[in-house]
Image 1: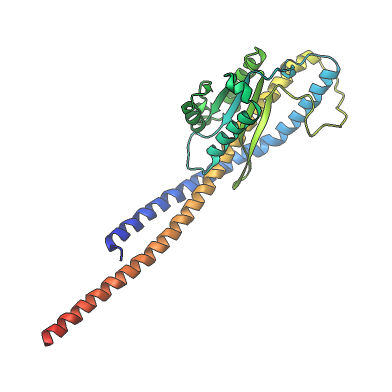
Image 2 (image 1 turned 90 degrees about the vertical axis):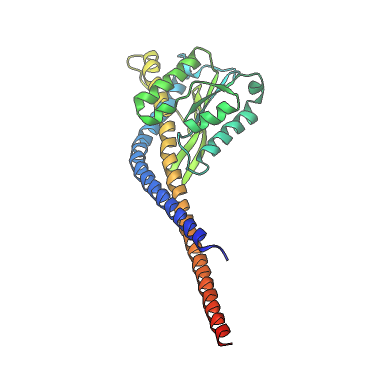
Length: 294
């Protein structure tokens, strides 16, 4: 039978762990509610702006107005933006994104990868640490974004990526991240960021809206399209941030439940060991009394 002192120490340790996981669950729940409000307000605006953006791109193509963000790309130089978190304890949240980014490269861009033409931009410490250890082509880390996640900070990174595309440094830019669905579910997503598609999968077969440009199509390209791209990038980062807290809250909830179950089992084991010890002591007393009678 297990030692009583060892069981008591283990029960105390598991109780301390349960207290920590329970506190982390409540912290993540509070952060999730705050961040969830942001993404729920942003999504309708981002989706509508993207819809206008796709229609506009198609109209510009039909009007033979050059859209520098939708130029024909050779797909020789690829940039994969991997969005993870700065901290762990959120289940398979980070591992799934890293695995998906490696899968996309191996299945679609293996030739470019073998030539050294695939680069990675990691937003989040966990993704950056893993990819750096694999000795891949890495851009400077952007972990600081999650310290103050605002549109202005994210748009500065998005603008750097857009300028790299326009200068021909990259021919194709992909975003790989966890999209928030609810607190327990995150959808692993791979999006084409650049070049922009003139016709999206949702609008194929439909008649594009005929826009009247004021002041001109060229001015629209300079103003609206970059703004739409920055909002798309910000939505991906914010989506990942919200999904992270949902994943951590769920992971800590399961850890708390597991700790509670373990404490129950250890308490039962402790009681059995204590009963056995008491029984042994009684037997020793009775045996001693019988020996004295003899």
